[in-house]
Image (cartoon, rainbow, N blue to C red; front, side, top):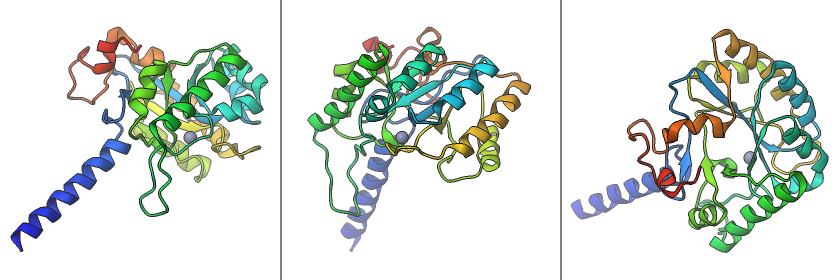
Length: 265
Ligand SMILES: [Zn+2]
């Protein structure tokens, strides 16, 4: 009986640990990753995933008006669909990161029929996105964001082969399901120096996604953060502060990370 209880507790710990490894913002289990800058300056990074889409240029126009530069984690398939929009985003001075080719879920589902991606398939998702972005915009991304924030076996090797640093976030706006005011309220409440804000200018690889709530929310978020004294940086700028970015969380000593040792930046 006691043995069964120990096994049960051990299994539960394993499941919780594995879940954190897959999804935890500070997890390094499946590849080097950052989720915030050091925060010594009052700066913050806006990131937009799943684009480019038909609505991206409206966002870019507003960012231009506000003199704010952001980071766009793009899907290769969307870049192939809207190469001219991807080029405009780059030309406006924004950073472009890799968000896989088809917005693939890299981690298998537990509750449904397993859809396990092999390490080579994971590499293919990342490399095809890298190729699409490079050939359409002439940018070779150095940052990668996993769809749904889910990482898995094989990702570390794919990141190493493509020299990609993983990027998570400090706040995600739920902008694919919430109205603008609620998105803005959450983002503003959780914003802090060195933070990385995750929003979306697309919806995975859907054509003509509705990103109107995101476009409205950002018109509340940027002026409010400016009022609080924040400046805006791309993710590379935010985490590149003398190799002192937080890779494994607040307990990590500056400059002691795997990514720093590997010269990933
Ligand atoms: Zn995504």
